[in-house]
Amino acid sequence: MEKMRQWSLLAAIVCWGLWGLMVTSCSQNEEADDLIQGPTIQTANVENWQMSNKVTFKKSGSGHIIKFSALMPLPQSNIYQTVENLNYIEGKVLTDKNYGNKALYVDRDEFVSTEYIMETTFDIHTKKMVVDVSKINNIQPYDPKSEPCKLYLGDRGEYIVTSNPYIVKTGDMLWAESEDVIDYARRCYEYVASNFKYIKGPWRTLEQILKDGGGECGDFSTLVVNLLRYKGIPSRHNICVTVGGGYHVWVDFYLEGYGWVPLDATYKNGNPKGDFFGKYDGECIILMQDFCYDFGYDSENDLNVDILQDFYYWYSSDNEDCKINAAHKVSRLKKLVNEQ
Image 1 (cartoon, rainbow, N blue to C red):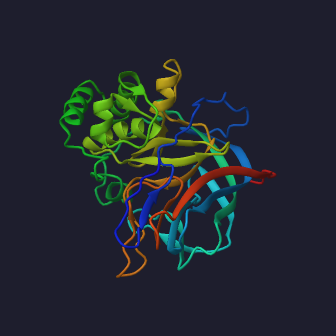
Image 2 (cartoon, rainbow, N blue to C red):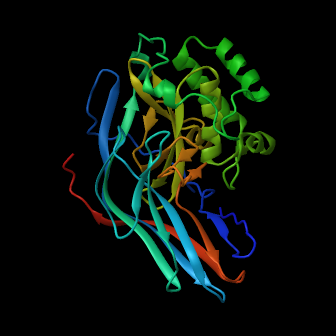
Image 3 (tube, rainbow, N blue to C red):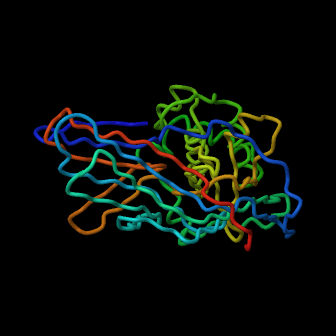
């Protein structure tokens, strides 16, 4: 999705990247044969690639670009992936003050040529995860001082609004039918998957999702996170690109004393007989987690972004006909030997 706002005099334009492009085919792979056995969790390495994440900016029209800035999300290692050998030619790495997400920031006083490429390369080792929630018997109460509770509860702009009447009514209904937190989380995932339609389009606010009766994977995730947070369950969006070059978003929720449990209501919507609760297929590269980031790098420079999946850019020109268009591409560069 691309949004533009034209300012006076310098015709400054703020553009958001392709937030609305989600994964075009949501499929779950067969179970791997080399799963590492454990009491509640099984993991297996899935993808091992050197990757390129690239945005190509092209100038058009007469006039000059006199100020250009861009922001690109950076992958980090976590329980689902290991990231190594991150490289880029130009820019500054900024850290999100809210959740620790990272992004590459480029700030140029001019746009010299008609084309500028912003690219990162990195090695990615993704992990498939299967959590056997039936073996989790001792569900502990949440510690409000824990990091997941501090970071992944509460509202986020127009996307996470836990006081929304629909969320309150639906959450109370599902909670009354649930035996415990895990059962409630499963009911939320199943309810969203079966009661909303997959509709292509840009990222939607909660109100837009409810009005449209559905959305894409990011919107399915928004519904699930709203329902979970309404009942005090830490949860978050995992905002991704896929190893194959697509886009996807899915959810995990936190269990005190255990850890994070993945689920995918979008996959469940596309395959009602499938089981995607407690399962992550390892086909994605997580770039950002949660919404509403603060990348302000000093006291005088605020840089707040609601959602960052591919890129975000803004510029000033001396002619309103002078514009910059952008195209995003994720691609595999080289297959890596698995040494994880």
